[in-house]
Image (cartoon, rainbow, N blue to C red; front, side, top):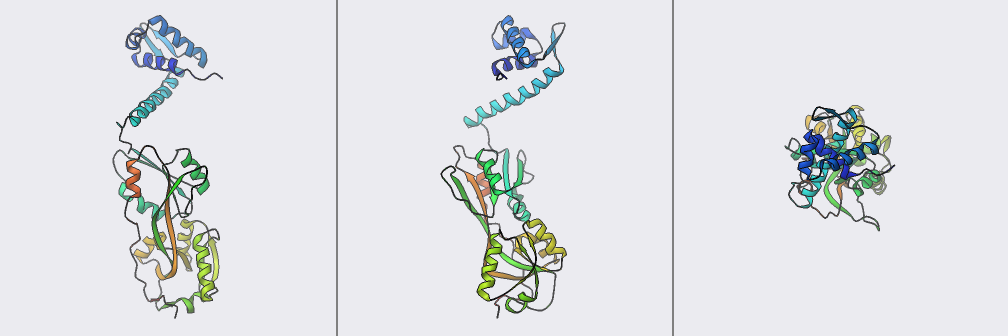
Length: 305
């Protein structure tokens, strides 16, 4: 298949916009016969007639209308590219974000809230595995990847990994009265915890080993959205960052039993080194830390005494 001749496509585009071969030839400063030759060459390459003549007016065929739609997009992108490189375009109209599937939805919403409803800004949010999203970032199909794992540069990619926030990891569960003592009550509680691939899980296991605790784990969940649902509906205790269940804590549907000492989830933004700065991305990543408002530890004892 021969590569599309964009010179011919531009001539077609001009004729389609004018609807008249003579006027299009004048605007392009070419002979009418030469313009007709270019249009015929494009029709032969595409294998379809693009115009039908009605008097002195040229009307698009169905194929011609389809080609015009593509040409509009192609030349609009070309103009945008030229304006961007010349610095004449405010490059703040689109923000393309990838977020790992295990990342808290509440954290993402808190991060994006100042930008929601902003005029002339389109936000695209994709979910996937870290590897998939980094590949899309490398291809410039994303502007930033949000993750709960730090990413290091390698020989092929110069990633920039910025720590956005650090959230304490807590035990939450249904409202109850009386103190919750980690040493006394944790071994008796049924726990829902993140999967073994989670840093939270590995930190929690190290904490339990150091304290001589043997928790009763009744469920392991990789997805934070599902962990939130089980925390809310199961009646068991759940191990997670407070931001995941911030709405339930504020409404009283769940209670914060304890913050687990020295365990936290970190949230990172991964970007590529860019030749052309994206102001809206700088604004997004330059926000103050998004720490969830602290909820009272009702009747909780964190000292483990």
